[in-house]
Length: 320
Image (cartoon, rainbow, N blue to C red):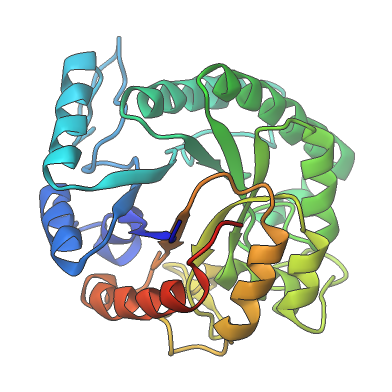
Protein backbone atom coordinates (compact mmCIF):
# COMPACT_ATOMS: atom_id res chain seq x y z
CA UNK A 1 0.00 0.00 0.00
CA UNK A 2 1.33 3.43 -0.93
CA UNK A 3 2.25 5.83 1.84
CA UNK A 4 -0.30 8.48 2.74
CA UNK A 5 0.67 12.14 3.08
CA UNK A 6 -0.12 14.48 5.96
CA UNK A 7 1.26 17.65 7.52
CA UNK A 8 1.38 18.88 11.11
CA UNK A 9 -1.24 21.54 11.74
CA UNK A 10 0.82 23.06 14.58
CA UNK A 11 2.94 24.83 11.97
CA UNK A 12 -0.05 27.13 11.41
CA UNK A 13 -0.86 27.92 15.07
CA UNK A 14 2.39 28.30 17.06
CA UNK A 15 5.63 30.21 16.64
CA UNK A 16 5.36 32.70 13.76
CA UNK A 17 1.62 31.95 13.42
CA UNK A 18 0.70 32.29 17.10
CA UNK A 19 -0.67 35.81 16.65
CA UNK A 20 -2.36 35.06 13.34
CA UNK A 21 -3.20 31.34 13.11
CA UNK A 22 -4.66 29.72 10.02
CA UNK A 23 -8.23 28.59 10.72
CA UNK A 24 -8.65 24.83 10.88
CA UNK A 25 -11.41 24.84 8.27
CA UNK A 26 -9.07 26.71 5.92
CA UNK A 27 -6.33 24.18 6.62
CA UNK A 28 -8.63 21.28 5.77
CA UNK A 29 -9.97 22.76 2.55
CA UNK A 30 -6.50 23.75 1.37
CA UNK A 31 -4.92 20.38 2.20
CA UNK A 32 -7.67 18.64 0.30
CA UNK A 33 -7.12 20.89 -2.72
CA UNK A 34 -3.39 20.13 -2.59
CA UNK A 35 -4.06 16.40 -2.55
CA UNK A 36 -3.08 15.53 1.01
CA UNK A 37 -4.54 12.38 2.52
CA UNK A 38 -4.72 13.79 6.01
CA UNK A 39 -3.51 16.11 8.73
CA UNK A 40 -1.56 15.53 11.93
CA UNK A 41 -3.42 17.45 14.59
CA UNK A 42 -1.60 19.89 16.80
CA UNK A 43 -4.14 19.98 19.62
CA UNK A 44 -3.41 23.61 20.43
CA UNK A 45 -5.99 26.40 20.38
CA UNK A 46 -7.57 27.53 18.14
CA UNK A 47 -7.43 24.16 16.35
CA UNK A 48 -9.50 21.26 17.72
CA UNK A 49 -8.40 20.16 21.17
CA UNK A 50 -9.86 18.35 24.17
CA UNK A 51 -10.48 21.50 26.15
CA UNK A 52 -10.80 21.38 29.89
CA UNK A 53 -13.92 19.43 30.86
CA UNK A 54 -15.18 20.35 34.30
CA UNK A 55 -13.25 23.61 34.34
CA UNK A 56 -13.25 27.03 32.70
CA UNK A 57 -12.54 27.03 28.98
CA UNK A 58 -11.63 30.71 28.62
CA UNK A 59 -8.92 31.04 26.02
CA UNK A 60 -9.39 27.47 24.79
CA UNK A 61 -10.34 28.21 21.22
CA UNK A 62 -11.28 25.05 19.36
CA UNK A 63 -12.12 23.18 22.57
CA UNK A 64 -14.27 20.10 21.96
CA UNK A 65 -14.98 18.72 25.45
CA UNK A 66 -18.14 16.80 24.52
CA UNK A 67 -18.77 13.60 22.58
CA UNK A 68 -21.21 15.30 20.19
CA UNK A 69 -18.71 18.04 19.32
CA UNK A 70 -16.06 15.44 18.65
CA UNK A 71 -18.44 13.49 16.44
CA UNK A 72 -18.95 16.69 14.42
CA UNK A 73 -15.17 16.92 13.92
CA UNK A 74 -15.10 13.33 12.66
CA UNK A 75 -17.89 14.17 10.21
CA UNK A 76 -16.07 17.31 9.06
CA UNK A 77 -12.91 15.35 8.35
CA UNK A 78 -14.90 12.78 6.40
CA UNK A 79 -16.62 15.48 4.38
CA UNK A 80 -13.19 16.65 3.22
CA UNK A 81 -12.02 13.11 2.52
CA UNK A 82 -9.20 13.53 5.04
CA UNK A 83 -7.99 11.46 7.98
CA UNK A 84 -5.87 12.14 11.06
CA UNK A 85 -2.33 10.73 11.02
CA UNK A 86 -1.73 11.43 14.70
CA UNK A 87 -1.99 14.02 17.44
CA UNK A 88 0.55 16.25 19.16
CA UNK A 89 -0.80 16.54 22.68
CA UNK A 90 -0.63 19.95 24.30
CA UNK A 91 1.59 19.05 27.26
CA UNK A 92 3.90 22.06 27.19
CA UNK A 93 2.14 23.75 30.08
CA UNK A 94 2.93 20.83 32.41
CA UNK A 95 6.03 19.87 34.39
CA UNK A 96 7.64 16.48 33.92
CA UNK A 97 11.24 16.52 35.12
CA UNK A 98 11.58 19.15 37.84
CA UNK A 99 8.79 17.88 40.08
CA UNK A 100 8.01 14.77 42.13
CA UNK A 101 4.37 15.04 41.10
CA UNK A 102 3.63 14.19 37.47
CA UNK A 103 -0.11 13.84 38.07
CA UNK A 104 -1.01 16.96 36.06
CA UNK A 105 1.12 15.84 33.11
CA UNK A 106 -0.51 12.41 33.25
CA UNK A 107 -4.01 13.87 33.55
CA UNK A 108 -3.42 16.08 30.51
CA UNK A 109 -2.05 13.13 28.58
CA UNK A 110 -5.14 11.09 29.44
CA UNK A 111 -7.40 13.93 28.33
CA UNK A 112 -5.63 14.03 24.98
CA UNK A 113 -5.64 10.25 24.64
CA UNK A 114 -9.39 10.11 25.27
CA UNK A 115 -9.96 12.92 22.80
CA UNK A 116 -7.82 11.12 20.22
CA UNK A 117 -9.81 7.94 20.72
CA UNK A 118 -13.09 9.80 20.22
CA UNK A 119 -11.94 11.27 16.89
CA UNK A 120 -10.22 8.13 15.62
CA UNK A 121 -6.55 9.00 16.12
CA UNK A 122 -4.29 6.02 16.75
CA UNK A 123 -1.04 7.64 17.91
CA UNK A 124 -0.21 10.27 20.54
CA UNK A 125 3.00 12.32 20.40
CA UNK A 126 4.89 13.26 23.56
CA UNK A 127 8.15 15.01 24.42
CA UNK A 128 10.09 15.69 27.60
CA UNK A 129 8.55 19.21 27.79
CA UNK A 130 11.43 20.94 29.52
CA UNK A 131 14.67 22.28 27.99
CA UNK A 132 17.98 20.43 28.20
CA UNK A 133 19.25 23.03 30.68
CA UNK A 134 17.03 21.25 33.24
CA UNK A 135 19.88 18.74 33.57
CA UNK A 136 21.84 21.45 35.41
CA UNK A 137 19.19 21.48 38.14
CA UNK A 138 17.97 17.89 38.38
CA UNK A 139 20.16 14.84 38.88
CA UNK A 140 20.34 12.74 35.70
CA UNK A 141 19.07 9.51 37.24
CA UNK A 142 16.25 11.30 39.05
CA UNK A 143 15.19 12.99 35.82
CA UNK A 144 15.40 9.71 33.91
CA UNK A 145 13.31 7.88 36.49
CA UNK A 146 10.61 10.55 36.41
CA UNK A 147 10.33 10.46 32.63
CA UNK A 148 10.34 6.68 32.39
CA UNK A 149 7.75 6.07 35.10
CA UNK A 150 5.47 8.78 33.76
CA UNK A 151 5.61 7.47 30.21
CA UNK A 152 4.98 3.93 31.39
CA UNK A 153 1.70 5.15 32.91
CA UNK A 154 0.87 7.08 29.74
CA UNK A 155 1.70 4.16 27.45
CA UNK A 156 -0.43 1.78 29.49
CA UNK A 157 -3.36 4.21 29.36
CA UNK A 158 -2.94 4.67 25.62
CA UNK A 159 -2.79 0.91 25.13
CA UNK A 160 -6.17 0.60 26.82
CA UNK A 161 -7.42 3.16 24.28
CA UNK A 162 -5.95 1.13 21.41
CA UNK A 163 -3.20 3.67 20.74
CA UNK A 164 0.56 3.89 20.49
CA UNK A 165 2.72 6.61 22.05
CA UNK A 166 5.55 8.19 20.07
CA UNK A 167 8.35 10.26 21.63
CA UNK A 168 9.66 13.08 19.46
CA UNK A 169 13.21 13.64 20.65
CA UNK A 170 14.72 16.97 19.65
CA UNK A 171 17.50 19.37 20.65
CA UNK A 172 15.14 21.75 22.42
CA UNK A 173 14.10 19.25 25.09
CA UNK A 174 15.88 17.24 27.76
CA UNK A 175 17.47 13.85 26.98
CA UNK A 176 18.64 14.85 23.52
CA UNK A 177 21.67 12.60 23.13
CA UNK A 178 21.51 9.34 21.16
CA UNK A 179 22.35 7.23 24.22
CA UNK A 180 19.60 9.03 26.19
CA UNK A 181 17.07 8.17 23.50
CA UNK A 182 17.90 4.47 23.52
CA UNK A 183 18.11 4.35 27.31
CA UNK A 184 14.67 5.90 27.84
CA UNK A 185 12.99 3.89 25.10
CA UNK A 186 14.33 0.62 26.49
CA UNK A 187 13.49 1.57 30.08
CA UNK A 188 9.87 2.45 29.28
CA UNK A 189 9.69 -1.04 27.78
CA UNK A 190 6.15 -0.95 26.45
CA UNK A 191 5.18 -2.53 23.13
CA UNK A 192 3.12 0.51 22.14
CA UNK A 193 5.86 3.04 23.01
CA UNK A 194 8.33 4.09 20.34
CA UNK A 195 10.23 6.94 18.75
CA UNK A 196 9.07 9.61 16.35
CA UNK A 197 11.85 9.98 13.81
CA UNK A 198 11.92 13.50 12.39
CA UNK A 199 14.67 13.89 9.80
CA UNK A 200 15.39 17.45 10.88
CA UNK A 201 15.72 16.51 14.56
CA UNK A 202 17.73 13.46 13.58
CA UNK A 203 20.27 15.75 11.94
CA UNK A 204 20.44 18.22 14.82
CA UNK A 205 20.55 15.57 17.56
CA UNK A 206 22.63 12.90 15.86
CA UNK A 207 25.06 14.90 13.70
CA UNK A 208 25.20 18.51 14.97
CA UNK A 209 24.65 17.73 18.66
CA UNK A 210 22.74 20.97 19.18
CA UNK A 211 21.99 21.98 22.77
CA UNK A 212 23.51 18.88 24.31
CA UNK A 213 24.61 19.48 27.89
CA UNK A 214 28.17 18.47 28.70
CA UNK A 215 30.19 16.47 26.20
CA UNK A 216 28.60 16.27 22.76
CA UNK A 217 27.54 12.87 21.48
CA UNK A 218 27.30 12.79 17.69
CA UNK A 219 27.74 10.57 14.65
CA UNK A 220 29.46 11.25 11.36
CA UNK A 221 26.13 11.13 9.55
CA UNK A 222 22.44 10.66 10.22
CA UNK A 223 22.39 7.11 8.83
CA UNK A 224 24.36 5.93 11.86
CA UNK A 225 21.69 7.35 14.19
CA UNK A 226 18.88 5.77 12.19
CA UNK A 227 20.58 2.39 12.39
CA UNK A 228 21.09 2.78 16.14
CA UNK A 229 17.34 3.36 16.51
CA UNK A 230 16.32 0.49 14.24
CA UNK A 231 13.22 -1.29 15.52
CA UNK A 232 12.36 1.55 17.88
CA UNK A 233 10.84 4.02 15.38
CA UNK A 234 7.02 4.00 15.24
CA UNK A 235 6.23 7.34 13.57
CA UNK A 236 7.89 9.39 10.81
CA UNK A 237 8.23 13.09 10.04
CA UNK A 238 10.04 14.18 6.89
CA UNK A 239 11.51 17.66 6.41
CA UNK A 240 14.86 19.23 5.59
CA UNK A 241 17.53 20.64 7.90
CA UNK A 242 20.06 23.42 7.38
CA UNK A 243 22.08 22.44 10.47
CA UNK A 244 20.62 25.30 12.51
CA UNK A 245 18.12 25.78 15.29
CA UNK A 246 15.08 27.99 15.32
CA UNK A 247 15.69 31.01 17.54
CA UNK A 248 13.54 31.95 20.51
CA UNK A 249 12.37 35.48 21.33
CA UNK A 250 15.77 36.26 22.84
CA UNK A 251 17.65 35.07 19.76
CA UNK A 252 18.90 31.90 21.44
CA UNK A 253 18.76 28.42 19.96
CA UNK A 254 15.46 26.70 20.78
CA UNK A 255 14.86 23.60 18.68
CA UNK A 256 15.55 22.44 15.14
CA UNK A 257 14.72 24.76 12.28
CA UNK A 258 12.41 23.05 9.79
CA UNK A 259 13.21 24.45 6.34
CA UNK A 260 11.20 23.10 3.40
CA UNK A 261 12.58 20.32 1.24
CA UNK A 262 15.43 21.61 -0.90
CA UNK A 263 16.42 24.46 1.42
CA UNK A 264 18.65 22.31 3.60
CA UNK A 265 21.43 19.77 3.39
CA UNK A 266 19.63 16.44 3.76
CA UNK A 267 19.81 13.74 1.09
CA UNK A 268 16.46 11.99 1.27
CA UNK A 269 17.54 9.46 -1.33
CA UNK A 270 19.90 8.19 1.36
CA UNK A 271 17.74 8.78 4.44
CA UNK A 272 14.36 7.42 3.38
CA UNK A 273 15.57 3.90 2.47
CA UNK A 274 17.37 3.74 5.83
CA UNK A 275 14.27 4.91 7.70
CA UNK A 276 12.19 2.28 5.92
CA UNK A 277 14.62 -0.45 6.97
CA UNK A 278 14.71 0.83 10.57
CA UNK A 279 10.97 1.36 10.87
CA UNK A 280 9.76 -2.14 11.67
CA UNK A 281 7.73 -0.71 14.57
CA UNK A 282 5.77 1.61 12.26
CA UNK A 283 2.33 0.01 11.98
CA UNK A 284 0.69 2.61 9.74
CA UNK A 285 1.29 4.12 6.30
CA UNK A 286 1.63 7.84 7.09
CA UNK A 287 4.50 10.11 6.13
CA UNK A 288 4.08 13.53 7.75
CA UNK A 289 5.62 16.87 6.77
CA UNK A 290 6.69 19.05 9.71
CA UNK A 291 7.14 22.78 9.10
CA UNK A 292 7.15 23.74 12.78
CA UNK A 293 8.44 27.29 13.35
CA UNK A 294 9.11 27.87 9.66
CA UNK A 295 8.11 31.54 9.19
CA UNK A 296 6.31 31.00 5.88
CA UNK A 297 4.94 27.52 6.48
CA UNK A 298 1.57 28.20 4.87
CA UNK A 299 3.09 29.28 1.57
CA UNK A 300 5.63 26.42 1.68
CA UNK A 301 2.97 23.75 2.13
CA UNK A 302 2.31 23.29 -1.59
CA UNK A 303 5.96 22.91 -2.59
CA UNK A 304 6.57 20.50 0.29
CA UNK A 305 3.60 18.41 -0.81
CA UNK A 306 5.03 18.15 -4.32
CA UNK A 307 8.38 17.06 -2.93
CA UNK A 308 6.76 14.49 -0.67
CA UNK A 309 4.74 13.16 -3.59
CA UNK A 310 8.02 12.51 -5.38
CA UNK A 311 9.44 10.57 -2.44
CA UNK A 312 6.23 8.56 -2.07
CA UNK A 313 6.33 7.71 -5.77
CA UNK A 314 9.97 6.64 -5.47
CA UNK A 315 10.07 4.92 -2.09
CA UNK A 316 6.58 4.75 -0.61
CA UNK A 317 4.90 2.05 -2.63
CA UNK A 318 5.29 -0.75 -0.09
CA UNK A 319 5.05 -1.37 3.62
CA UNK A 320 7.82 -0.87 6.17
